[in-house]
Amino acid sequence: MCKTEILEPTEKNLIRAGEMIRAGELVAFPTETVYGLGADGLNKSAREKIYLAKGRPSDKPLTLHVASLEQVEKIAKISAAAKKLFEKFCPGPLTIILPKAENIPDFVAKKNIGLRFPDNEVALKLIKISNCPIAAPSANISGQIPPKTAQDVLKNLSGRVPIILDGGKCKFGISSTIVDLSEDEPKFLRVGAIPPEEIISFLRKI
Image (cartoon, rainbow, N blue to C red; front, side, top):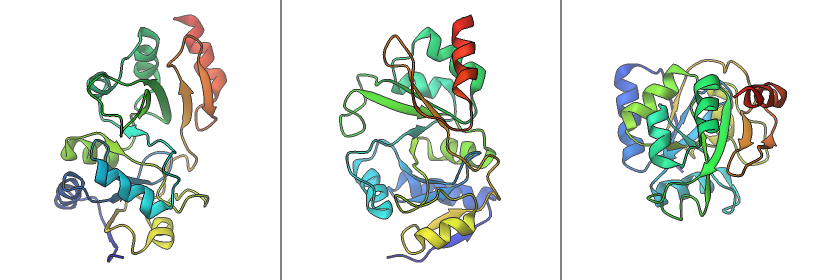
């Protein structure tokens, strides 16, 4: 167990949080959907801390949060359709599953990887300062309601995460839509903030 602090997302605190991410520690932070429990997505021991803190099944994959399309292209094999989808809906509440790039180790993903480009200033600043993709499932004990505020995170994960960056109440309060584009036909794995019909309509036009 650790002491949990709720911090305003000042430049100083964001730098501190980024240093903690780079050091393999956990940081909870806001996105436009729900608060995420973040760690360096390419650090094996840091990823394991997420599973331990949440009580999350070890076979359940972790989405990587990025701050640019260029970052996506370093992590995954991106198709023309996926690129257009990122350009249309991101930053935004959408997670896209793609085949991983060859340089991504198996402990991150065996074959396919989920990527999300959040539409939240605090989240994007933290990713950029951390200088790594951030793995961040919702900041709650597995099976409980995803948190919409920093206080929600504190109630759920007090003593399990050192820092919670308080970005206020999340815009949507529901999780991102997940679409799998690793095969020829798109598959929706979770219906979230963006209606699947809107995504399908867009893909049919390109």
